[in-house]
Length: 388
Length: 130
Image (cartoon, rainbow over all chains, first blue to last red; front, side, top):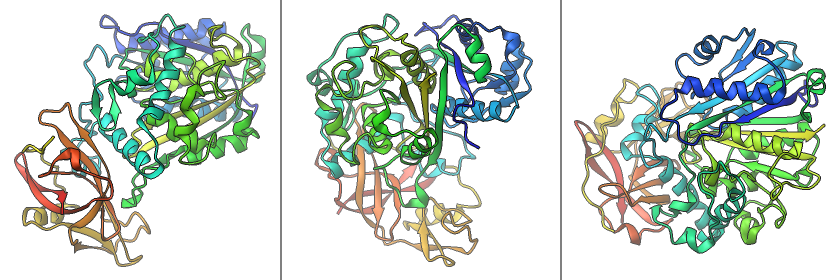
């Protein structure tokens, strides 16, 4: 069974906060849900399916369904880190196609900025995680893991620090138009490579922001979506793929997008050349280059050349990306950027992006997420959508 | 930037991996080898992640390899270097690079195993340039 055309995205909301010391995580989830319902023109009682991941407090869907007072008959708490929400949209489309629910709500929220989270703090997934004894003592952090990915890419393909920097430069060109973005100053390649070295070869400006906030998406049936006021966005295809260390045959030169991408393109019946706008998970500049290659926007190893010279800047380059400023400049709520990737893609398809970055005739868009770490184990998710 | 001595967090020792840590304390690097599919794997498991056989056994590694990739965490106190080292046996393991000038490291460089203490736990295999 294909999900192509079986479900639509009818509501989106990105919380405007970037620092929320006076709000709870549950409250942020609920405010995002309410925002997406208002956007869709639906009410809370219309929701009969709920999707959340590890950022949801307590016992995930049980805690949040109870907190928000939802009456649902379908829940899904698939957690693969920051790409979970793209998978939730895909799973929601499957559930809708199977008749399990009609109006599915996906929420993400968190307060890593208020809680003092940092990408240079070692992450420990607990004593029962089988990999932890063989990794945690060596002090893996989010940034040194991605640093190792970038170092290998540079060694194997000749990718340069300047090419990595172009990803951030393009994001900053977009963020200047987003009043909610954390970082709105346009930066140059020199600014990036002259910023502090955090973990070789990644500089401070190669890294995404740490922000509080959240977002929500509503997925529904074609019939309900067409009855609502907002331009409907049809889901064309999706793919998901976890990838790890392959039993010790570690290969950091490709990501799960090499699997999830072709799955999504095949289901959608489109090719990379058909994509007018792409939201690409940008935890770090290297993350974008890896995924662009694996999705087939360029050949493996040529991502650095592809992103250079403003090729990702809307109105200038061949592939406008992350026109909200992305995780590098705008927002990375809960240290999980997946939902904002969906939201900006929907804005583009609706024609609701900022006029300065709106892609003309944006009929097909892609959203790509990477959760966990490209340096160890991650979950890739690809979602392709169409203006209906 | 030179390596500075640091004592890292202790790994959690489990029945599945006790032998690995006992050997590390004795200055030996063990790997799991599957006699059903004749392949090493890492990190060590009871069941082979390649063929899912339970016919896995411990074998001592030569402790020699090359740097697959690395990253210098310059802002940490003290700074340290994360790495993946590709062992001669054909598996690649996460580790730290020690007893060297971090700025002189190169991908592809030959390294050998050394053992460094953890805080109240077993010794950990790390690597230094040959």
